[in-house]
Image 1 (cartoon, rainbow, N blue to C red):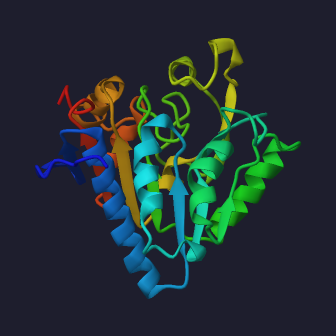
Image 2: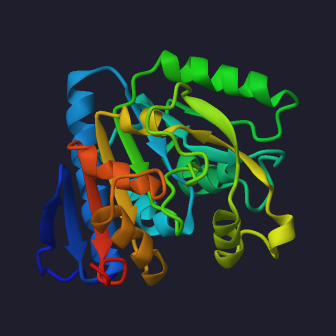
Length: 260
């Protein structure tokens, strides 16, 4: 059992965004998971089901581990969505986000439903339409997200990010920084293996959730965090839009907050 230091997090607010900084990634993940749990338990006390959007990335593993360990969340009443998937990748590919969430989340909690983006659908535009309809019918209660090394949220990289996107989901070309990060995280052996295109939920879809929990550990995210919090609110750093979301809390560890 890991010992979480009882040191309270440093708490800041930048514009509308609440920020909690912990000394360790473990303490950060546990705090973010407790917040998600409290929100879900309260939501399910007031309505029949809750809908959650989840992110798939190595930065989310400890947070997801903590969240799936709680026994008092009625997962059988929770409907799950995920925020992105590579175009042309099967559900069993080692780098598939469906596989990541199936193994790390769905298998542990047995939710009411998990609506996956079918990355290898024969008709990608139809798949966008299908997922858009699912999202249209289901208001989102909670969105759990991260921030990429290039400042992206989901696969809304700087060249394709749109704060007023008319779509709920779209197909995008991934920028090189984003594709290099996937290699760096061990998802693909080399850059040439990383798909050039992906499905992503758009920024307005992510921000439409009633609550947002953004979990960002590690030194390699420090620059993106600094840009998002200290630079202008611009699609050049898509995560900067979080500063306008008063329903969002950003969880950092000492490493990711090191340049602030």
